Structures are given as C-alpha cells and as structure tokens.
Length: 88
Image (cartoon, rainbow, N blue to C red; front, side, top):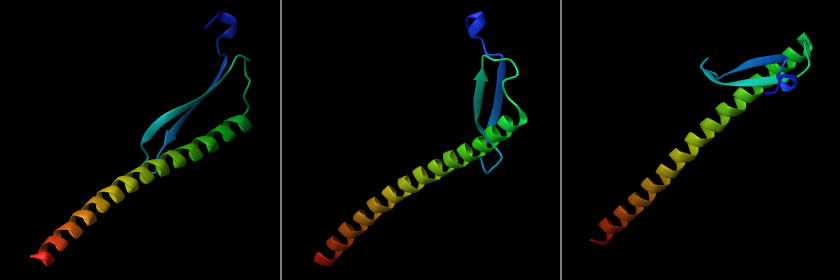
C-alpha cells in the first residue's frame, strides 16, 4: 500500500461453521480512520454468520451430490448384475 491508500480501519470477522470450526475470515477495510461504528460491526458479524451458513450449505450440497453420483453408479451396476443373472 501507498501510505495514503493504507487501511486505517479494519474489521476482521471469523467465519465459523456449525461445528465451531473457523473456516475463513472476512476482512472489511477503509482508508478512513475510525470509519466503523458498533452498528457496522454488528452488521458485519451478522453477514459473517450468513456467509458461514452458506459455505456450510454449499459443502453439504457438494457431499450430497458426490453421494448421489456414487449411488447412481452402484444402482447401474446392480441393474447390470441382475440382468446378467436373469439371462443365465
């Protein structure tokens, strides 16, 4: 940063999942000194909670998609197997 562009106000919000594990950090910065009030901090904290929930949901969705794909493969294998058995 150039000195005039360096942040003078920062808010760091930990992104915590449902298992109370930190999964990231949200950073909000301003070049203005004392740019944020408690109101801003509370909004950022709430936003961090929503972001954490969204990230958790995306992770769970991805796991479900992977399981669904595996089940589809297993189902196709089972159908081929049963078809082979009935033809013998």
